[in-house]
Structures are given as C-alpha cells and as structure tokens.
Image 1 (cartoon, helix red, strand yellow):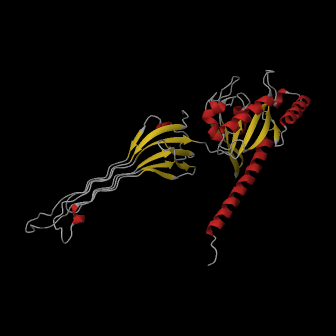
Image 2: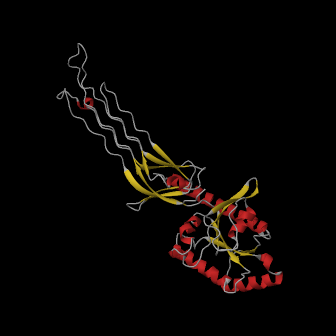
Image 3: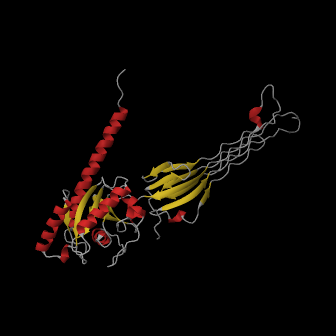
Length: 357
C-alpha cells in the first residue's frame, strides 16, 4: 500500500432547506390558514479516526467531499428532512489544519475521536411560523443558510513510543526487522527505506511498545535535502529516540562523531521539540569489530561527543545486544507512562478542586 501522510481536500457541508409558503385549502375549510413547514438542516462533515487505516491514500484522489442538502419544507406543516452527515475516516494521529487561516482545527490521536470540520446550514422557516393575531395570512418565509465550506490540510503523524534516528544505512531497518514483525526493505545502498514503518516489540503478553523507522536523515534535511524533512514530523509524538550510529563504517570519510553532530543540528533546525526529547545512543554493527577494537572505538566516540546518556552496543543483523536494549526500553517507557498518568491525575484533581466560600 502506498504511504501518503499529507493531503489537501475541500469539505462542503449541506445547505439548509428552504421554508415553504402554503395555505390550508380543504373542502368546507376555505380559510384554513398558513401551513408551510420549515426546511431541514444541512448535513455536516465529520472526521472520525479508524484503527484500520494507517495512511491517507484513500483521500488522495477524491479532493472534494460534500454532505447532503436539507430538504425544503412542505405544505400541511411538514418539515423537510435533515441532510445526512458525511463521515470521512482517517488514521489515528491525523492533524487537521485550515488552509486559509492556518489555524489547527484538531489533533485526532485517539481511536473513535470525531471532529466536525464543516457545519451544515440552518433550516429555513415556513410561513406557518409567521402567523399572528395581526398577520393571519403571512407570506413570509426564509431560505436555508449555506453550509460551511473549507479547504483543509490533513497531516498524519505516526503514533509510536520509540523513534529511530540515523544516517542512511545505519541499520535502522535491520533493527526493526530483528525486534518486531515489521519487514522494511534492507539493502546495501543509501535510502533503502523510502517511507516510515511501524513495528510492535512484544516482550510478553502484557508488555509491548511501538517503534517507528523513518528514512535516513542527511545533512540539510531540515531544509528539504533527502527524505528527512518530509518524515521528521513522525518523531514528534515519540517518547524516546534511539540514535543509531554505524560504529564500523566502510569508508574512512564517514566519521561517526560528525554524523551524530549533523543529525543533532538537523533536529535543532527542524524544531517541534525533537532536540529536547530523551535520546539514547545505539552503536550498531558490533559484529564487524573485535571486542577490543569496539571498546576503543566506543570510548573515543563517547569522549568526543561528551555523551552522558544511555549507550548500547548491538548488531542489528545478528541480534547481539538487542534483547537487553529492548528490555531497557520497556522499563524506561513504563516509567514515562506512569509519570504521565500521575501528571494527568494531578491536573484532574486541581481542576476539580474549588476553594471554600
């Protein structure tokens, strides 16, 4: 399936139905009075998240979505039928923007969440509603109001607990294949990964987390170089980043320290809080070095980077070191989730607290 994470569409709610001008005319009732009914409200346009979708590709080819118009009012005090609402299903993690104003209309990050992006028009009023003691035969009526029309932009930001960072061929796809059932392409040339991949790491029945692999980042990604700019936003909702580094580069020009610094600069330039996220350093391709050479390379790298965070050495190809890394990630994520729940509980308690009069 083609991965599409950004689309622009036009949504148009239904117009309200017009009110009706009618008078009761039956045998033996020559002056029955007004009986024109109101029109029906126009249908609205809603976005609803669906767990079975993981891309916006279904919205790429249909650019205009219209809800049904309300039916006009009728005689005998019959009100027009309301127009049916239009429901557009989108993946969980979709952000919605108004193209004209630039306003963010919503952030759909929960299953079943609903957002109204265009409201239907209000129904028109029939002449029966205008009758009074001084206006026995009203001929006034009102038309239905137009439904809202919007140009909106949908952005999909994947929901994952852990995001993978690194230059092309650092081993991100190999790692996600090793620890989950995801099967991204793996090859010995840059930019093998052309679209994000999600994998579920399951350590036990009750312990699992989601890991995201995005295309490799190169220098200038924040300005549009490579594929990094397009997919960097998928790291925005992650709780933790794994920064993969090729500890045994084949080319002497590929300096691991320089590559780490370049990616750090791109994260800072791109913003969205990526540089402030917790980041672990993962030294990959352990299988290509002798233990003594690996320790020497590791010590030199950490000294030059002045790195104080967690560091793990692995081989994504053979799986060496990956079980310990996944267990450590699970423990850290559980701690972060517990802290988030505690903060939410404190905020809820503060919202419910009221001072005594």
